[in-house]
Image (cartoon, rainbow, N blue to C red; front, side, top):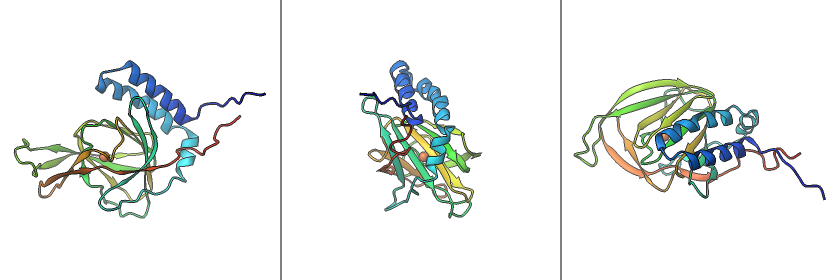
Length: 210
Ligand SMILES: [Fe+2]
């Protein structure tokens, strides 16, 4: 009986390399820097780019964003998300200003462009519900750009009025731990759980059979 051989697809190649890296590199800052070029290969894959045109639009509901969940690693716990933002939004509309709590995140733009704002915290954590911030950077990002968001780093994405698609790698699946929420005008601060996770396929099921 012939044995079916199949070339690993881009997501499977990413997972294999990421697992090697998690096994070999225990320094978290180095590990996440080294993961950048691995994610860059995934973002450059034409089949992933093509498939992403058909990923469903993520919809915010009850104050929570939505992420597509492609993969959660059974041993190392890292997760791969897709995030699609429809093109019908007004230029200048921003996501809530937030941090990701204690996790590391690589945010890679797969399609479209948007702005990424980073904020600096000005408080000394004396009051639990008050963490004033100021805008530190505002960068236009596009296909292939990767932003490393370290624990508790404050940021927001701003639409320029086009559909954008991102592939996000997180050290732990979001949605089950608290993340900080910030108000630029008032300095108000609170915490709530992150995006709900909707299981989806990054690539069509029988992709790559030979
Ligand atoms: Fe974020």
